Image (cartoon, rainbow, N blue to C red; front, top):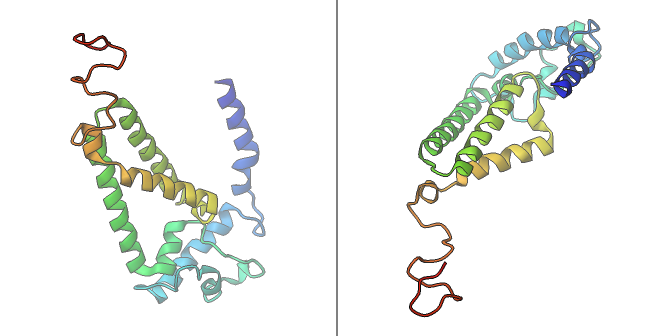
Length: 192
């Protein structure tokens, strides 16, 4: 509880304070609120395929308001909005298909795994993915290679789980067959 209180105090002083400043020349809430409608305006110019993945910085100059001149906006600070602008409706549709497949896989795994370790891994993966999904609405963390790699490894591990392995459809690496006596057992006597 003490560590959580100290962490909350530090976040309130340093972490959240940068969003509440009033200067337009810093990365803050007021400037982000001005960028969002302009980014939506940019999307309306290229609704189906967007401006091209990775082109937000170049394309934003088409709609950048005079109040934000002198600033370079290379991100929308909302990855969903940025995907809509740069990938259009087709990019968002691809994201939704992938998200639905992953969510279906997680739900299926959560309902079928028997071992507590497997269930804990599925729940941990679901929690981590939910945290990434939430964070991407307010920032662009997946553009950092370490975050993107970690998320990709997590999603790959979940997608690669074998449902049959978890529920006994295929045998796991068995320690020993029950019918085979242990090497140290005497002939005619079962092993330990």
